[in-house]
Structures are given as structure tokens and as C-alpha cells.
Image (cartoon, rainbow, N blue to C red; front, side):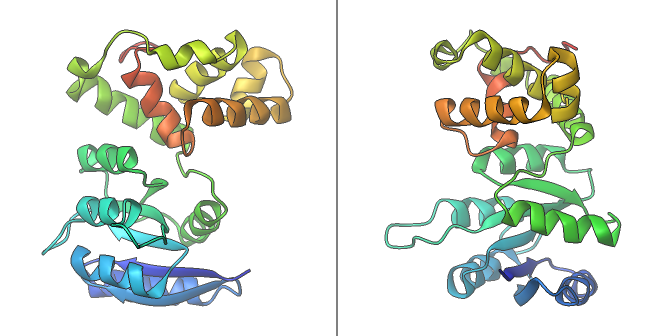
Length: 225
């Protein structure tokens, strides 16, 4: 299956470079690009891409607002692409809000070409692109800037088994599936099964939202390791 991609970035060189790299892949088709968030929303609704590469800071409309509009479309618009935010890590606050809005993850603009190609494929397949190292950075940002967000444990946690709660907590601490499996002495496939059940029970889209839920629900406190 061909993955349809659009690139939304206010820098023409970035758009051209990413487009050339992705278009050279046999399973990826770049169907358009836009120079600001407003154009990106219009193109996202007309071109029906599978994945949108979205810069965070742009004129007219920033990537955060554009992502919100694409992921929460008005009545009558049924297409919801996957959104992969592009950042330079000096805008963690925007990235956090983008993940809460439903973005599937984020990628550094200076990531190696192979990482960009892999990211598009991972997000198109329905997975969240939130590597453990990135999760830890997100946790640190949460601890610094959002201590007031923490509340008491959410009643939604009551629907999880003790094992599922353990798995959710370890996801929130930035562990990979392999690391969770080693910590709980489980097979990696079993961990994947538990994660799937956690997401279904809590009505979460992906691993990124699971991390945010764990912190905002009070399961894990910022600063805990």
C-alpha cells in the first residue's frame, strides 16, 4: 500500500529536501506541500493524506492549531490523517500540547534520513512515534512546567488489572516494550498484548496518549523514576 504524505513547513528548502527523500521510496507518495498551517489544513482536507509532516512554528497558523483542526475536523469531514510534528526541541511545550491534541508523535528536523522514512512508515501503520528517550524528555518538561496539573488517581484506572496498571506506569517512565518485558519478566509479545488492552480500556489512541494520561491521572508523579 502506498503511503500518501503532505509536508507543511514554512521553509522551502525543508519541504523540498523532505519531499525528494520521501518520493524516492517505492511505498511513499508525496501528494503536496504547504508553507503555513492554514494552507496545510486546506491541503490535508483536499488531498486526503495518510500522514502529515507538520512543522510547529509557522506564519498564518502554527502547526499546533493546524494539527488540532485536522485531527478534530468539523461535521461532514471524516478524514483524519496521522500527524507527525517536526521540531527542533526548543518548543517542547508545543509538542506536549500537540500530543494531547492527538498527534502521533514528533521528529527532530535534523534526524537522519533513515529515521524520517521510518517515522512515516511507523505512523502510517498506526503506531505512535514516541521513543523512550523522547518520552523521558517529555516527562522532564512535564515536571518543570506542569506540576499543578497533577490530580488524584483517575477512576478510569479502576478498570485496569494490576498487571495492566504496572505496564502503564512503566510506559510513562519511558521504558520500551523490551525493557518492560525484562522488568516484569514477561515475553515482549505479552507486553504488547497488555498495552493493547490498556489503550482499549482507557480509550486512548496510542502510546503517546498513554504517557500523558498516566501523568495527568496521577498514576505517576513528575520527578518520580
